[in-house]
Image 1 (cartoon, rainbow, N blue to C red):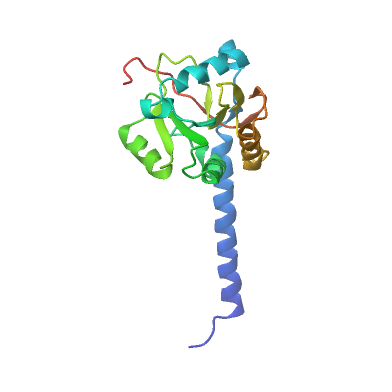
Image 2: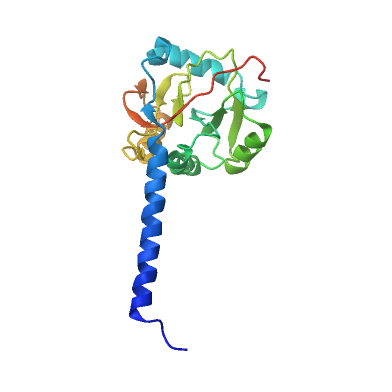
Length: 217
């Protein structure tokens, strides 16, 4: 069998290159449709108040399963996850890297917070993807002001907010690195203080957080 001609090889390489560039452009275009601030100017002022956000995070932790309320976990990491958000693709690496840093560790607990409208199927999917995390829905009665996803909250052992906001900003959210958050958690684990840092000043690939409905379980 004779080897392919140089012309065919060049043509195939060109087709592959076009396909790759087209895929990258398509991803960029779709993500551009979700470019918005983490907190819009039209969002409630409570979303910009660190004290209210901190109180909301503390209240959220009171809804954890009884088996998790009285453990010796020293740091809680809350990931804001909307299964219908295209922007999850740019935060998934950060989320997995942070969780995989402490797989099954008693020192850090992970909470995946989803909208009230999340289906049981999506909840099951999240539990499979993040088996070491507590997956729970936001409720209409929650005090935590939720405006967008993906996002991250980090709470110290005594319930103080260390961080809340975006993983990063920009079209591809590449301005942040998960090392920023893992180092933050390690600092809290060592007994040092951090924050409160409310990181909401910037635009990136975010989806509106669905409005809570009273019919949510």
